[in-house]
Length: 239
Ligand SMILES: Cc1cc2nc3c(=O)[nH]c(=O)nc-3n(C[C@H](O)[C@H](O)[C@H](O)COP(=O)(O)O)c2cc1C
Image 1 (cartoon, rainbow, N blue to C red):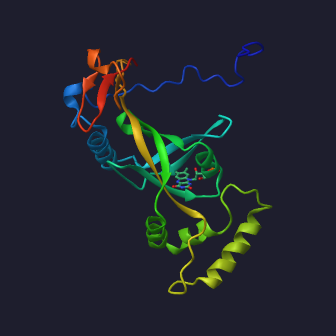
Image 2: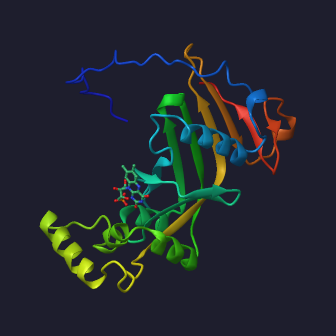
């Protein structure tokens, strides 16, 4: 990698630093509510949902990589989770969908600032069955259904007017109580986690990181790796 020719930044924010008021003492393995990541995620997600100032606890950065390995990230909304994985919905013609067609693996990153917490999920991605996508699509408000049906997401368009004309057209075809908007090339994905990391920021800056992952050869002989439930192991990572 070439490091030459990079001097001071034009805008220097090196001293911008927020002192964490840690909500807990050190986050130790004893404070886990479960020895597997889904129930642990549920506990942290419930706390984030009840925390004033966290308006969209289900907003997460979805990272994908293209066929040639170029990464990209964007926010999407988590729409359900459980032992089978973490679900979100999007347009199947979008840039992220093209990435997932070529390379069906993804990372999800949550940041709950008011709690000084982050969760990272990594795993394989599958499309949800069409009936699941149909049911969710038609449960959304009409404006969201029309928004999803305007154009293929991530397509280049001429201007905002093009969107507004198409919206007016669809509103005429599909008034409230009128014929339903057909589901466009849009639907759900599920990320089946192989790794889930829980990060708790600490005021001391000695942050806690506990990672759940699927076992590999040698784990049984490694005293740093603890056996969890449901086929998971857990370990502490350096901050
Ligand atoms: C908080 C937030 C939530 C979002 N939720 C979704 C979502 O659930 N699904 C979606 O397709 N786009 C969502 N978006 C828009 C995406 O970030 C992105 O603009 C869009 O999906 C196109 O991404 P792509 O071109 O990389 O495919 C959201 C944006 C923000 C800021």
